Amino acid sequence: MTGESVIPVFGTGVKFRFDTVRSAWVVLAPERLFLPDEQAVEILKLVDGTRSLGGMIDVLAERFAAPRATIADDVTAMLRDLGDKGVVRW
Amino acid sequence: MVNAFAAPMGLVAELTHRCPLQCPYCANPVDLHRASAELDTATWRRVLQEAAELGVLQLHFTGGEPTARKDLVELVAAAAGFGLYSNLITSAVRLDETLLGRLVQAGLDHVQISFQDTEAANADRIGGFPGGHARKLIAARAVRRAGLALTVNFVVHRQNLVRVPAMLDLAEELGAGRVEIAHVQYHGWALPNRDALLPGRTELDAATEAVEAARVRFKGRLSVDYVVPDYYAARPKACMGGWARRFITITPAGQALPCHVAESLPGMVFPSVRDHSLAAIWRESPAFVRFRGTDWMPEPCQSCDRREIDWGGCRCQAFALTGDASRTDPACEKSPDHAVMMAAVARQSAEPPDFVYRRYGAAAETAG
Image (cartoon, rainbow over all chains, first blue to last red; front, top):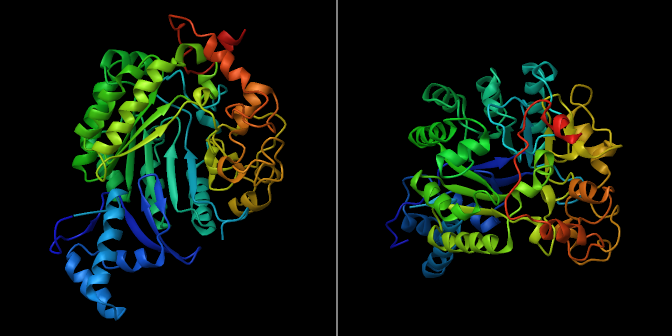
């Protein structure tokens, strides 16, 4: 991950969807499954194949009325973790 | 939410026991179902719908060889319609561009291709299918060209373990997003072949080291799943994530099982999806309730602080090695039966004996 201009996308074979049985968002991947926490869900909802990391930080900083630098750290760390798991790439 | 009655996560659909390969470590029962005993398309459709309604998220089409079923594309389309994530676990020797195109169109999400080795001659000998390895390579590349996620699976044992580094390289070269290096589990056909398959400690340690190095090298682009051999383990595996906690397996003839080997357990009656709804089977059937949770556990499991991590290990292995399915898995070093595993390791011969190949009637020929 280098800079806020990168555009995160879901990894090949990864689906992010709402499960009505559990009333929860789930990440479905090849023979793996993740139940993302609330923070990860808010971030993953913004992964649309066109929005940059910077754009995602802008949206979340405004929504949570938080300092942009704090949000930037959180979002970057979370995406890096999701990247290590193969859920997203850029 | 996570309790004994939480919804299942995965359904393993064994569409058929028919398979062009004859791998001597196949997890299918030695008493294979014939084609005439298989569930029909309409019943499978109903089962898939019930699975989705029950909370199943991922569907694993397997077998035998699932592409041997003429209605595979129809079932993949049905699964997609019910919102299930579908995974095809295949030998791929019959997976050509035409079939792949139809499967993609139907909504398939992921393909797992099994390889028997990286050296074609040995791979074909192990699978008992001449020319199979070359076909798998072609199919794996076609899967990636079709834009599908690919897992490459290697079942490893003393007759191919030395090539684990080459296996990891092949997975990378094929563009897989996931690779499984899975030591043989000694169920089904593998138990009578154990002396031909169980590796030595030195070879095992070298393979484990290669896996650890690859995990670092591939981080974020190719995930490495490693299934260690119980015979050298100190702790048992949480088999299927615990009995009837996460998975339901449906056999070709329609029996519902908490794991794909459970039919090996005597005295247990497994309900059929021909007679019961999946929800009733999951919640109430005695076979699913029998080893669910921790109440059934003997010592040393009952007082062990890992009882909700290991879930007592594998019931089928406990039965196969001790004759009692309710004992602690002998893979655990705390098990009073752990010595039976040590004995199998100690008995190893310098040269592996011949394979008993998986085919209809073969086990009876040698069981004698």
